[in-house]
Structures are given as C-alpha cells and as structure tokens.
Length: 440
Image 1: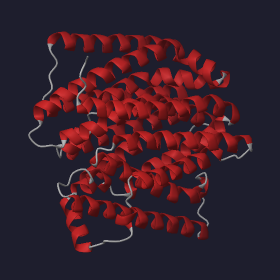
Image 2 (image 1 turned 135 degrees about the vertical axis):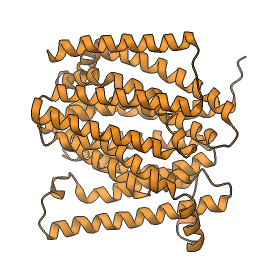
Image 3 (image 1 turned 180 degrees about the vertical axis):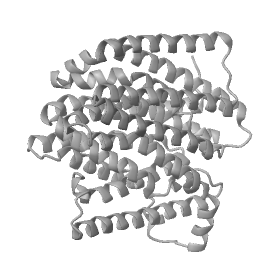
C-alpha cells in the first residue's frame, strides 16, 4: 500500500473540495449560458473586475500574514487588524459613491450594481481572513467545504434569479453565495470573538509594523497583478461591444477553473511549509511534486483546447458561445504557465522576496495595458487583442517560473528538462498554427 504523507493528504483534501466546488459552476454554466445573455455576462465581468481589484486593497494584504506569527495572540491581532482595515475601506468606498452621485459624476454609474460593490468587496476580504486562519489551524476540510457551499448556493440562486428574469442575477447570486460561505466559516471556525472585543491598539500597531512589508511590497505587487488581470476587461469596454466582453469573461472564468482547482489547493499547503525556516530540502521536494502534477495537467488541457476549444464551447454552452471557445485557444498557453507556477509563486512571500514579484507584476501590467491599447485602437480587432494578451501572460509567467526555480534552488535533470522544453515547444508550434488559421 502506498503511504501518503501529511502534505499529500492536505493537498488531496483541498483538491477534492476544490474539484467539487469548481465542477458546480461548470455544470451551472450549462444552464446559465442559456438563461443569461452575453451582455449580462459582460456586466458580471465588469463587476467582477472592479471587485477583483478592490479586494486586493480592502485588507491591505495583511490577511496573508495570519499564518506567520509564532504566537497565537499575534495571529489574533492580525485578524483584528484585517477587520478594522476592511471596515474602514468599505465605509470610504461607500462615501466615494455617495459623493459621486451628489456631484452627478457619471463614471461610477457605469458600474453594474455599484452600491453592492463595497459590501461584496468587504465580504470577499473577510472570506480570505477565514481561509488563512483555517490554514493556520491546518483545518483544510473547512477550506474545502467552504468553496463547495459558496458555489452551490451561488449556482442555485443565479439560476433562480435568471428564471425570474433578474437582469443582474449573476451578480446577486454571487453575493448571496459569498454571504452564505461567510456564515458557514464563522460556524466552523468562529472569529467573531476576535472581531468585536479584545482590541489592544498598541498590540495591533505592533503586528502592523512587524508585517508592514505585506502592504508595502505585497500590496502593490498584488494590486498590479489584479490590475493586469482585471483592468483589461474594463479597458476592452472602451474599444469593443459589451457582448465581446461577455465572451471574454466566460472564457477567463472557465479557463481559470483548473488554476483555482489545483493551484489554490497547492499554494495554501506550499505557503505554510515554505514559511518554515531551515526547510529548504523539503520545500524543493514539495516544489517538484507540485510542478510535475500541474505541468502534466496543464499540458493535457492545452492540447485539448488547441485542438477542439471552439467545438467544445459550442457543444457544451451552445453555438452562440463558440467565440469564447476561440478565445480559449488563443489564451491556452498562458493558462499552462499560470497553472505551473502560480502555486509556487507564494515563495516570494514566504521568503520575503516581494520586491522581485512586484517588478514582475509591473512588467506584466505595463505590457498588457500597452498591448490592449494597441489591439483596440490600432488593430481594432478583438481576436488579435486577446492573442496579444495571452502571449504577454505566457512570456512573463515563463520568466517568473525561472526565477521561482532559482529562489527555491530547484533544478531539473537533463531528461526532465528535455521533456518540459520539448512539450512547451510542441504547444507553441500548435498554438501558432491555430492562431494563423483563426486570425488569418
């Protein structure tokens, strides 16, 4: 009988939970794609892009520090610090919306369900607090169950609201799923006792200073990463109809399912293990195991998308979503690199190398913004713009992967290196052939 170590069991628990959690929106998409229009998915994509950017700011990235303190009382003070930051940020955001309404500024009126956004962002931040606190306690079953409960309730309410002809049903359903997930986490790992009493502002100030590099370095880096992921959706609305934004949003949400499934599960365990000092050999062993699994999975997904992406989307979601399938082919190699290295990218935080990650995210942000402006204003072609977006992500993530291997000290032997580079070369050649046939 094969013996599975603790890390393997933890990853297995998270992966099974994530598998079930991510299968739910996939199955729900079969129904939602027929209930909601591409324009409604475009509104959801715009709302999600704003929330994705603001969710990075809401807790100041202090939630990432919850697993770091040796003393439990310090970890509890980090939780209190996160809650205070999130509450203040949400209040300020509501004030900005109110002032803009009073001043008759039209920009914020273009945000779908704008007044739901601050609460959505606050709950998103709090959910991350619960997740990191559960990670500290190594209670991975709660993390796994939380995603299943959230996505189940989200899917059911979205379908129900869609059948009731609610135009913003995708947004309202996502909010309700998030709220139910918060309630579940509070029931399983209560932190209410920390949030509403026991505040010693001197101690909170002390942990804020102790982990100040999270807002100083990780926050700008994570914000740039979020901007480079979410800002393109907002920028694309300036050049192309909302219908195309809906196709793009559907593509991104489905392509990121394997990243969320495998990557998030792996990264939580890897972050905890790589934060332990004098643990280099174990980190290298775990890194190789994670990379091997994610690379093989990503390779299989890429070949499938490059050969049959448009037909798969049309078959599963309906013929009107074939455009999303074409976009999936254009983006697939970027997803391969993201799947391979995003679980390991937490090494920048666990080894206090946030400045390196920041520079990589600066490069990714600047290139993506420039390419979208070029694709939208000069080429005026959505397909070519999506291709350039994917190409940029592929190159930057490949560079980031090389740097991650250097930091960890992980080296592949000659046979492993030839297999990896040969496989990537085949993917690139197949990608080029498909791009030429699509965009020619």
